[in-house]
Amino acid sequence: MDATSMTDGFHVMVDALKLNGIDTIYGVAGIPITDLARLAQAEGIRYIGFRHEQNAGNAAAIAGFLKQKPGVCLTVSGPGFLNGLVALANATTNCFPMILISGSSDRAIIDLQQGDYEELDQLAAAKPFAKAAYRINRPQDIGIGLARAIHAAVSGRPGGVYLDITAATLGAVLDVETAQKSLIKPVDPAPRQIPAPDSIARAVELLSRAERPLIVLGKGAAYAQADEQIRMLVEQTGIPFLPMSMAKGMLDDNHSQSASAARSYVLGNADVVLLIGARLNWLLSHGKGPVWSESTQYVQIDIDPTEIDSNRSIAAPIVGDIKSSVDALLAAMKPGSVKPSAAWVEDIGTRKQKNMDRMAERLRANPDPMNFSSALGAVREILTKRPDVYVVNEGANALDFARNIIDMKLPRHRLDSGTWGIMGIGMGYAIAAAIETGKPVVAIEGDSAFGFSGMEIETICRYRLPVTIVILNNGGIYRGDTTGGEPSPTGFVPNARYDKLIEAFGGRGYHCTDAESLAQAVQEGLSSGLPTLINAVIDPTAGTESGHIQSLNPKSALQK
Ligand code: ADP
Ligand code: MG
Image 1: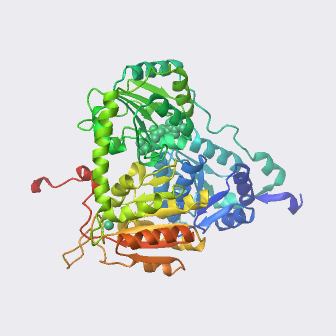
Image 2 (image 1 turned 45 degrees about the horizontal axis):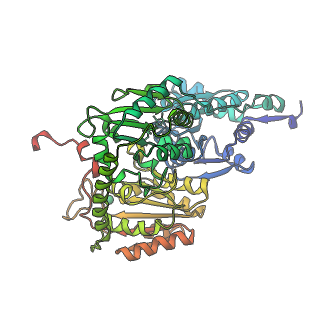
Image 3 (image 1 turned 90 degrees about the vertical axis):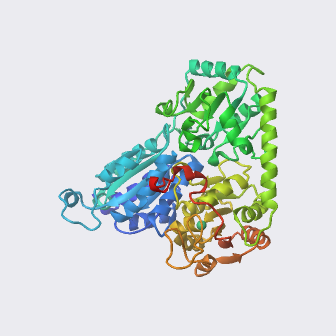
C-alpha cells in the first residue's frame, strides 16, 4: 500500500468532528493535541485558543446550551485536563451538552505509575464529574468514540461527556478506506420523548382544579427551544409565570403575566405549580417551607424520570421532552378549562406594583459613590434599548442585583452562574456567546468573579470580539476592606484599575465613578463592537456578605 492511501488518528478525528457538524473547538494547545488543533483549523473548523482550560471548557458548555448540540473543548493531558474538569462538572450539573476531549499519555506507563510527562488516569478522574466517559485506544475507533460521546451529551438530560484519546491513537497510521468506513454520524442523537397520555390527563385534571396556579420556567425550558409552545401555554391559560434566572426572556420580563416582582408571594401562595424544566433544588428552596406552602401541589415536566420526587412529592409528573409535553398539554386542555382566579391575578398585580415602585426609586437614586442599584440602573438604561445583546452575569451581589434589575426580552440571552453558583464562567461564557451568535455581549461581573477568568481578556482582544465587560468594583469578595492594615480574607487592592488591564492587549478601558459616564461607556462599548472593559467604581461598603444566600453561610455557634 502506498503512502497516499494512508491516514492517521489526527485526520480521522478532524473528519469525524466535521461529519458531525462540529464547527467550533474551544481549547488550549499543547502536547499531544497541538497538531489536532492546527489540522482542525486548516480543515475549516473554527479554533478558539484560550489561556486556561477551565475557561475554554465553560465556553464549550455554554455553546452547547445555546446551540442544542455538544460544545467541544480540547485540552492537553494531566494538569490541562484537570483544569478543564471543573467546566465539565459544571456542564453536567447545569445539564449543558459538552464534550471534553483530552489527549493522554502512554497507557502502559500510566497504569504502572512509572511517571510519564503529565501522567494521570484521566478516564477514572473524569467519571464522577461527567454524564459519561470514554477512551479511544485505536484510530479505527475514533468514529464510534465520538458518536458515543455525542449521544451521551445530548440525549435525555444533557450533560458533560469526557472523551479520552491517547497520544498513540492520534499518531497511529491506518488506511484511508478503513478510516472512512469507521466514521459515524448519529441519525437521531436527541430523540423526542413523548409523554404518556395518562400523565398528561392527570396534569390537566390537577391544573383545571387550581385557583392559584403558577408556571415556573427553568433553563431546561430555555434549552428545549420550545419558545412558541410555552408562550401559547402561558397566554392561553393566563397563568402567572416565574422564570428562573436563565429562563428570563423566554417571555418578556415586562409581560403582564410575569410574577417575578412578586416572587415570594407566588411561591408561598400558589396551590398548583407547573414546573417546566426547573428542578426543585436550592434555587427553589427545595420546594419546602417556609418559602413554599405544605399544601402546594406540583405538575413537573422533566426529561429525566429520576428528577421526579427528588425533593418533594410530585402529584402529576410528566416525563418527556418539553416541546412534546407542552404540545400534549395544549392539545388536552379544553379552552377555558385551566385558568387562574381573578383574585389571584389581582393580588399578584398589587404586589408587583408595590415592588416595582420600590425598585424604580432605588434605580432613580444617584448616590456618590455609586452602589449596585445605581450602577446597574445605568447599564439597564442602555440594555433596555438593545434586547439583542447577550448578558453574562456572575458574582454575589453583582449576580443578585443584576438578575432583578436587568430585564430580558429574548430567550437564552442571559447566561449566569446557574445551578452550581459557580464563579469563573464570565469570560468563557462571554466569548462563546459572541462566537456562536455573532451578537454583542455585556458581561456584568463582580470584581472578585472577574478575577477567576480575567486573563481571557487577551483572548477577547485577540479575536476582536464584541464583548463589553462591566466590573462592579467594590474592592473585594462581597465588599471591600475599609479599615486598612492587613488585607482581610475578603479584601482586594482598593481602587484597582481593571480598566488598564485590557489596554495592555489593545482593548478599550473606561474608569467610571458616576452613573452617567457608566451609561455612556456601555453605549460606546456596544456601538464600537470592540473589546471594552469598564471599571465601574462602587462604594466599597456596598454589598452584603454572601449576597442573598446568607442563610447558607454557616456561622460559629459560639458567636450566637
Ligand atoms: P433552573 O436552574 O433554571 O431551575 P434546572 O437546571 O434546575 O433549571 O433544571 C433543568 C431541568 O430541565 C433538568 O431537570 C433537566 O433534566 C430538564 N431538561 C433539560 N432539557 C430538557 C428537555 N429538552 N425536555 C425536558 N426536560 C429537560
Ligand atoms: Mg466585589
